[in-house]
Image (cartoon, rainbow, N blue to C red; front, side, top):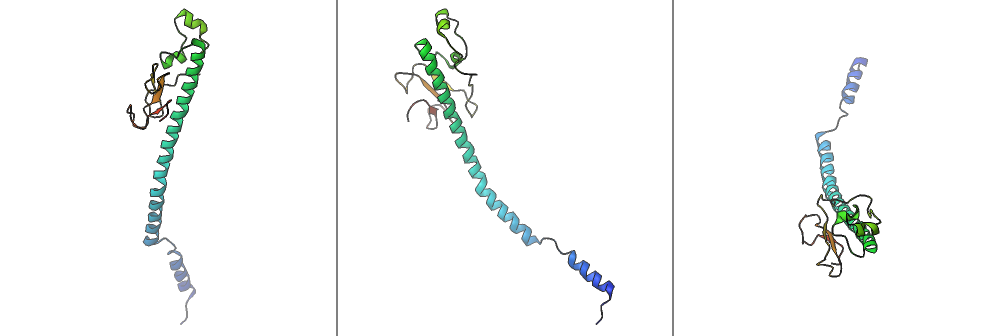
Length: 150
């Protein structure tokens, strides 16, 4: 059987046009991507949560340092967190004030909630309590991040 040049060209073209992926190959790739995604995505959220907790701890420590500098100047802890950045209106306190003790006020924790402060601490009987309500935003829960030992 003799093949003409034209028939050989048609056979070659037919074979070249079938170089696409099969449905099975596409489904296999999709299954692999779903498996990888189900492993990676939860780990990313865990990293974000840990980073937020570490950021809150760092901010509590920065506020704690500022509170201690304020105490060195005023011989007492401030009445509120804003006293760390605003000069007191009381003349006697204003003379001793060497602030601002923070470059700018830290208004919110990583979850968007205000930091809590008690000048007369309950957790620290001889000092103050300073804390974030943590990821759940609820005061008094186990995830609170404060200047006291747990």
